[in-house]
Length: 546
Image (cartoon, rainbow, N blue to C red; front, side, top):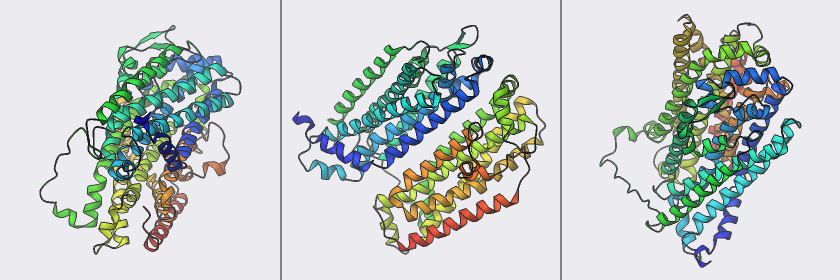
């Protein structure tokens, strides 16, 4: 046991440091899963015909297989998993990888590992402690998801299937945590490690998507049997468990095997490198800096460009996929009266179901752009917590100028991403459905209207950074998750208007189905500007918080 000396002390430290971040992240993900389960049960729980129509539409749909996975049949449990499992598993994977990187590579990058290593702590203790923290987080996810699934179904879903679903979600998280343990040994920076982890998650998602898209129809055309590539991905394993129908418990052994192999390999790699370095050598930078770095805006651009490029690629792919899905959803809406009724209630003045559904997709893209705004503005917090901001402020740069450079770059990026999303949805929608080209301007106009809500959300994040820097990251991402939940399930669950109004996107009309309204746009812009001004004033007066 001397090889793991100090592990439990580091576990306690890790849980102490994550006492706010992890509970908020876990609660947000599990509550979103709960609302998804509740909405599906409310829509289809008493409608066998609706379940059959859903399965008949989803099984042959290429877009449905890519973004929801393979449906097993017209059972309520299969529909619930098709609607909520994959998105939840993705969120759990990111929570797990970020946790492991935060307690391994980030500690080395900030030299905390040097301080820890000077004590009576073994070399492998930090890695094992990080994995234990991730394991505890995933056990909490498994338990909470199971309980909420049982509660959300109102007795319509079996207890055994609900528990198996929760355990599978936890197993997905543990497997990606073990993969993150390997990634943390390869690079010498937390950002690079997180980017590589995101790449691993993306590859796993892609392999599963290829296996599902190339799968065969079964159960009379109401189910899908995935092909081999799905079995190369933990996401594919989780879906092949088929809780509520086949209950393939043996697949959980695949997660155990992957975890054991990855943890052992990560421990081996750790013995082959020095603390603070990675297996891959860092390439030297250019001998001379670009002249643009002499300005605060140029520095902000240099720090933010990686975030912007990543979100540009993601939003472009998502927007194009939404545009392609509109044609398939036209048939789905025609065959599903329950979902059609729920969508129709969104608009107050239009009966065009296609335009109403298009307005929902545009609103989702607006919230997605708000995710970029959150990450971009929280980069200021990263610069502050690592102490790099002090080197900049020790020069002639004022706090206002430094903060405004980041804010302006992020807002300009948000406008650019909004245009990218509008073109992605609009062009693919018009090409695939042969709609008139003048509808492209309606889509662009409706997308640009989302900027007012994005501005309000940006003001919220700026205020968090200035007034509550230590809690800014979990609260900002919690607010982002709340916007998604409210938009996705507010109408379906018939939530009170005051809950819908919590999200700035809930105040906007359902454009292009409804017409533009000046009053909510003006109020949202004013709110965002006011919060940003208060944030600037507060940051000028408070201390730098590491």
